[in-house]
Image 1 (cartoon, rainbow over the protein chains, first blue to last red):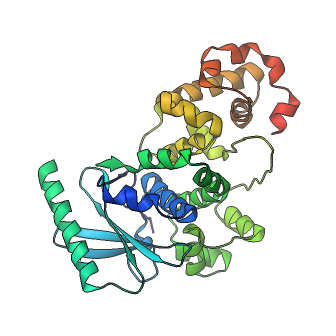
Image 2: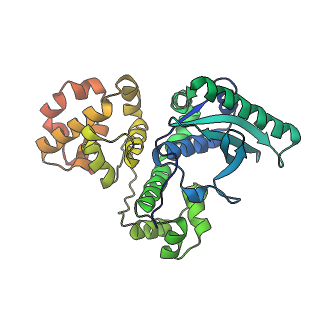
Image 3: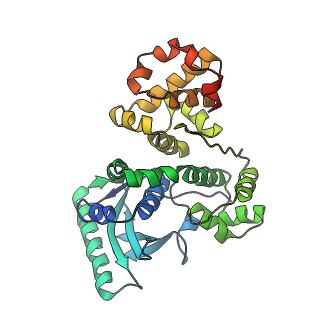
Length: 128
Length: 197
């Protein structure tokens, strides 16, 4: 069986304001994990086996604008952070939203994801 | 929109982050080479797990950097994937590149941007404190470095790995020095001790 990776060679991009600010406040180990994960995605892509079932690295989340991938990380303070990214069609993996969820997702947090999806939709529309 | 590379460059200016990032570099590279070799062989995590007598979840944890890998496990993984394991400890800022990467680097003139290794090589080089600064100023660095490696390798009759070690162990080396061609005029600097790395 030949394994084909997804999104190999894609560049990781994100919206200017909120995401870098959020990332900058994280502890060094979590930043390292994020840097390493993004480096892997850019260099080797995501293997299908990394997507899907619970516990795998990137959880897919369907939305109106396609599939978002969720990267789940645990900070040193045992906080769970979830980072969503959307593969654009032009070799870009756009990072949408970073969220801190202690336990599961509240309605408000779901609303934030929807909001971020809309922002992505607007961006994609404007970019094309 | 902003790229992650830009943010990472900012982070690397922070000493605390740079220390954590550098300390995990050998493990990260090991994982990346293992994963890349597995994908090249067309093996799934489950296939690899069966070959070395462990479970798929262990391989998944290793590849995600969440597993503390023993030396024995490193050996088993390398053997199964036909890789050679090198572990070195050095006082110098030396980068050890696996042979496969060196070969790719040597052909960097035609280095395919989408190749599995190009980003790995780039990141490896970026992680060298000496090279990081230079790379920012000279985007053609990889290509030029590859030519330089060929020249040094020919001039000193040494293999590519040693040529790379030589370049990266030049204490106060900067790109200007490499570019000035003087590297080739100083054979005494590339002695046994330098290459022992």
